[in-house]
Length: 448
Ligand code: NAD
Ligand code: UGA
Image (cartoon, rainbow, N blue to C red):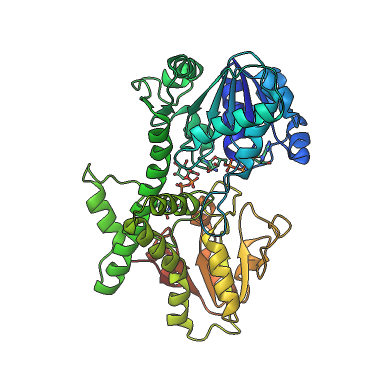
């Protein structure tokens, strides 16, 4: 099938590359010229396991092309994915300006051939109809001579950063919202290889469930899924905080409740809280949607509040051990919001750095992916070291913020000797207490 993907970020690039790998002819459009140039030269602009290899292969096969020319992309695609960013506005509502710009371009460039326009970006409930309206208005404004000949489908994305390629080929479900049988059938044909598990890790599994629904329900499924996961993490963090007070171990508790199949083991890792580009913005957007319709989303608000407090818990624990933080040096192990990604959007590390700086501490950090030069504009008050020994040197405490697997195997006895005080706060409950204590550390975790 001929596919166009507009927006080559974490979602668009992975979607485009995987659809090309399945034999489709894909044109990826982005208005960031530097990114398009990089992609054309075969380089991957993001850290995503497995993606560079797939990109190299589909480029060599001529199955994928990258352009800044949105008109060319639109003319190419029978199926056109909108995968641009939907960041939060300062008040927490969704900034739809990038989706709107794409919809306007669609209105200018659509011709008389039938097109399926797929909302893959996470967009507020009702956006399917709104995108249709913007396209029709733009067709009129541009005096586009062709009669409208397109359907809108909502196809929310559930991939996780750090395992985006795996998740694309091994999804738990595919959600398709729309009211055109033709469009919904064509979308299932596009995804058939994934549904059949041709590209999956375990080909013996039954087919991937496809949830066919109306557009609003599909849009709500995306928000409800992210909101549920965020609530689940905030729930276990709240339990961890109670464990801390009563002397229970949250990891034992998580195991004990997770074995109940109605609860499940996943997303019960207590720590510094959730971050990333989506949980915070999507929960905020759902709270706003609820408010727009006269409902106060109490559970969602509480989940956000617990998460805000959770990020500061490591500061509290540092203060309990070190008392005054002014003039102390704190080393952070990990900066990204989770391992296996270079993404720093809404990372808990950023909140921790800001608070430590405000309290007068000097902050150093080491991350396997993020270097000082790789820090985004606006990230300040932290010196990024090139290795863990430099990080530990002279520190009053180390704080594990991101559970990168590399951190399991560090030479902790040596790190302890390099420090001014061997204090270790494990913000992800990731390491073995006995090992760290044997290495000479005072080890403090979350809810254990
Ligand atoms: P991103 O910021 O990484 O990428 C967006 C891309 O769109 C950028 O490359 C940008 O240059 C491009 N773009 C913006 N305006 C454009 C335009 N007018 N024309 C062409 N290109 C344009 O975003 P992302 O993380 O990939 O997220 C995209 C959407 O997918 C969001 O709605 C997000 O909520 C949703 N989502 C993200 C994830 C994730 O893990 N990142 C997972 C599921 C859903
Ligand atoms: C999340 C969802 O898992 C995806 O399904 C969704 O598509 C995506 O958001 C999105 O809409 O962008 P992602 O943000 O990539 O994916 O990462 P997660 O693995 O969900 O982790 C999110 C945050 O929660 C991370 O900071 C992680 O460290 C934290 N987390 C996760 C915990 O603190 N405890 C856990 O048990 C699990």
